Structure formats: C-alpha cells, structure tokens
Image (cartoon, rainbow, N blue to C red):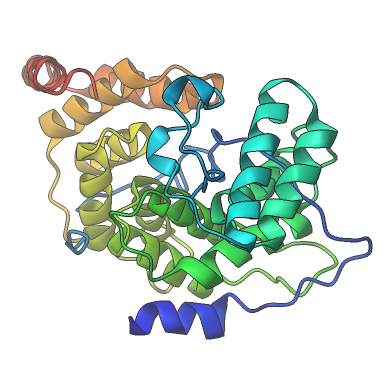
Length: 318
C-alpha cells in the first residue's frame, strides 16, 4: 500500500543518535499519549477507517503453558530457523517478565527482537518508554517501535499482531509531537498527523483516532479542522475510547466551526465518559462533565442523562 511505503521509506527512517548500545524490554498495557484535552475549546466528527507473532517450538503449546496475558492467538505454527528461535526467546522472555526477572526477560526479548519478532520489539519499546525495570530511554523505545512500523506497516488489520503494530505507530506519533532530546527525532506535527492518520485509517486504532481528533482541534495549528476532529472522535467514542467520548462531548456541548452546538448530546458523551473513567489522570473528564452539567439547562440535563443511561445499557458501559 502506498501509504505504508511512504511511512517506511519516508517518515519512519529518522536515525536516532544516542550514546550507549541497543536494548530491550516489556510492558503490554500502557498508552503512549495521556487522555487529556489538547486545548480548552473542543469539537467532534472523520472518515470511517477503511474497511510474529509468537512462534512456538516444534510442539504446539497448550493454553496452560502460555504465560499470563499472552493470547493463544499469538502462537502460530512451528517454523524452522531464526523464526522458531525468535518464538522460543519471546516465550522465555515473557515467562521471565511475569516472574519478575526483568534482566533475564529483556535479554530473551532482545534475542527475539533481533530475529524480527514484532511483538518482542513492541514489548521492548514499551519497557523503555515507561521505564519498566530499566531507566526510561525514549531513543531506544523509538528504535524498537520503528522496527515494528517499518517491517509491518502493511500487515493485515486482521492479523494477530495488528494491535501491536498500530500501537507502535501511535507511540511514534507521540514521539514526533514532542521530539526526543539529543537525537535526530525533532518535533514534527505534520509527521505525527500522518502517522496517526495511517494507524487510524488502516488499522482502525482508537488511540490514533483520538489523537488525530486532538490535533485537528489544536487552536495554534493551521490545519485546525473541528469538523474533521469531530468525525474521528466520534469513531473512537463509539468504540468505547474514554478520552474521545469526553472530548467529543465537550465539542458538541460548546459547538465550533462547522460543528453545531448539541448540548444534550454533548452531556450524554461527557456522562458516558465519566462513567467509564477510572484512572487518576482522567480527573479532567470528571471536571469537564461537572462544568458542562452546571451550566446546562434542566431540559438539557434530563435529555443528556437519559441518553447516557441508554447508551451505557446498550453498550455494556463501553
């Protein structure tokens, strides 16, 4: 696909100039960009998105042999050579990680990553990004995420590793937004927007859709487009993305260029988001909902709450 080729040979080839050697690590569950509003004003609605895997040793493992948190869908047929070695190292690294042996886990994951295992590369990127048992090292994290994106941009969105590939793109977009000190990765909002657009469109990733919506609401950007922001936020909100639900709610409650004010619907999304929010870094969602609720009319409150209750009942609070 032309966009994947563009990303591999254009946007994602920045050399990371840092001191020290290569490294590796692991943590499957953290967002690269926090769910907090980009600017005080907000809007919401973007085109709907279009439309390794851990490889076992010769004997296929049974579910009870897999480490916690690893789906059996990620375990494919045995393959000879380096691919099989990568699968062995990945499973060993994952087991050591959950046993608390970060040093041993990183070494095994590094071996898997060197043999091209995309999920091992992603896990190492997350480890260095979050400082999970190692000092935070954004340059190393970028390098591991970049390996995933460069080699798997055209993987099918239905493939077992697609969520990890999309997550790597989202992480790279975040790095291009802020840059990485003492490296060739400089802040580049346009590049970040292109990366988010690819992950949002091709992989249908809700984090990418949310971050794309935020960028289109940036009041300092020449590319500001509240209507486009609303479209992407709506797509992510319907998938249960809490940040997108809240930002869409703010946008609809206040209205903006080409986005008519719909206060009841805005309150509905803000209330749904507050019901789903549970992390300390999502306090902004509670504050936004309370602020909108305090200035809404009685009729808007009743309609917003009723619609929120209906949404939650139908979607299982997602």
